Length: 356
Image (tube, rainbow, N blue to C red; front, side, top):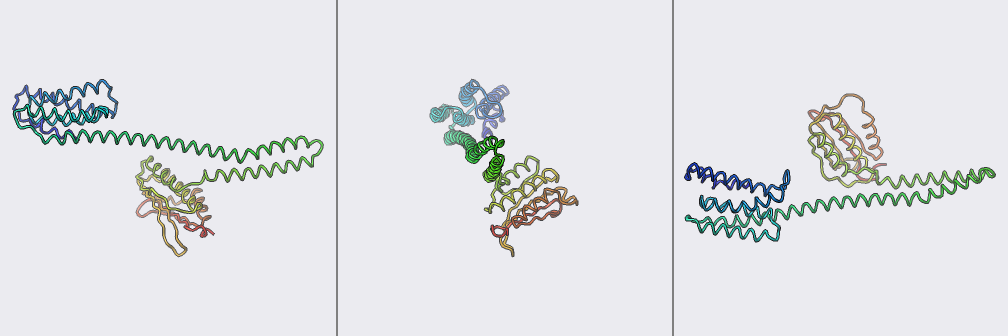
């Protein structure tokens, strides 16, 4: 985009004041300058440029700028602004500020050597462009470090979650399994001579194993509970991956655990149906809190512009959703969308007591 400021040198060449040979040489010099500048500024995009090519390009830029400016006139002093940008983009930070100041001073010196009046208005662009590029570099570096830090935090969180699950299962099952093992060995020894006592030990084993199963289910229920915020993010990703234009809210309302889980499962099933069966090009998800005669309700709407209802009875997925919503005092409505497509509306009460 900044190459648009090369309009002055290009206009100077178009005037044709230097003859065919001078115009061609000037155009070649300008093309070489632009090539070296693009190599430096865009070196981290596409295929990375080698260190030797960067150093050679940075060395060629000031030579071309001085020669072209002294040969063709003050209109070419704008090339020093690009050298400032290149220095800010390439050089180590400890040398960058000095290089920008030196580049600006050389531009002033070359302007004084010219017969025409130097274009001193380029002082501000030269300084500002170079120091702005330093800021851009720092911003890019900070963003990269932040991204890496987030990835490390996510990895640490996942590791901590795995450790917590392993610790909880060990604490829950360690004692129970040890007790089952001991009672099994004791029942085996009692079985030949005291079958009645062995039967008591087997009954104790059954009780311990049932209690261990209950403890494990309670421990893992928090891991398996569907969360609405997670399902919203998953819906956005799934619809986008399927090529469906998605309008999905980024935040979920605060709901009791059972109501949130029911809406989360409903959203997952609805989005799955949109992706697999609807052939839709657009899907809109909306979550709204409404005041009704029965009390406050949260309404989840999933609407697409696909093929619409097939006319067949509801499948197992929608039937299961209706049962899941009914268990928490909610309702499910499905039908044709306005115009074309399919519309699903799930409503759940906000208060926990409403589920009765």
